[in-house]
Length: 415
Image (cartoon, rainbow, N blue to C red; front, side, top):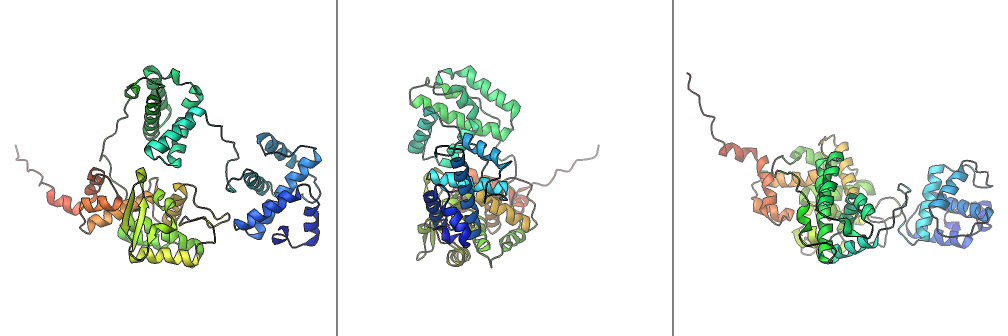
């Protein structure tokens, strides 16, 4: 399989004489199945061969590539004189080693990352994640966010939640408020409240302890949703180059966000079977794992068909949208879709001055429906809000209707 990525016979022969050639062949087969180009695949294979050669020269037993091995190899690169491996760029070499390590661990290949090893989760955290999935249908993305918010708390507790009491919880939130913004504190408070409820249900905390967690001040409808004007939305939709596979994918994603008001997470979770082409409906699994059928418009359907027929790479994944660069795997989370929307806004010359580019397009879809005469109940149905209370904020952007309700300013009689 090495011959698929290398054409020069002396180079192939050198790799064949390299220690661990069986692993290199298996790695090459996997890279081919993932859709790697010959140039990128050959770089990863040379990096893996370099690592195997280095370990053999140092008489190290071959095992999983842990932090110690990685740091030792990186230190070797600064003084490397290995025959046949001199001249490779350090960053590309390290990316190849990470991909090789992912292959050895039977994990999806990922060529980017910080290189830091994640801490092993405690048994208490594993039990919490299992409970949240089974009892509340929580997604893995939400649980990763919870783990980030509660990282310091979990390090302090370990597997012993007996430290948790009213004073501890209040002090934790107060210290967080001194060092973080309001949004971060609110998200952490929500995660902490769910964690304490799990401990109560599991009999590890007294009932009612979650009431000790203070509420963070928040005023509903205190701000306006940021949305785009109709001409700005059209510029954003026209910004991808539809002649390229990436442009076809990005346009299909933008149509789902701007025309149907989907969330970025909804787009990530879309599967090929979620579209019923005969009835022109789209099945969306949103928050709380609720399945909803939405009508598929001609424009959105044409954009998706163009991507599926002429832009989507060959892959075994059933996800609707996949990465445009090998390995051809689905987006890891909603941030990939948000990056697509952010890039489209930048190309269109639209400055929104807020975070969450994908959600701005969702707000724009709701505001457009309101301007065309749709009721709040209709908008709530399309956006899949469980209550129109969540949709009321869009009433504030209907300036025409608000002018009809506004009372004339009272005249003040002169003294």
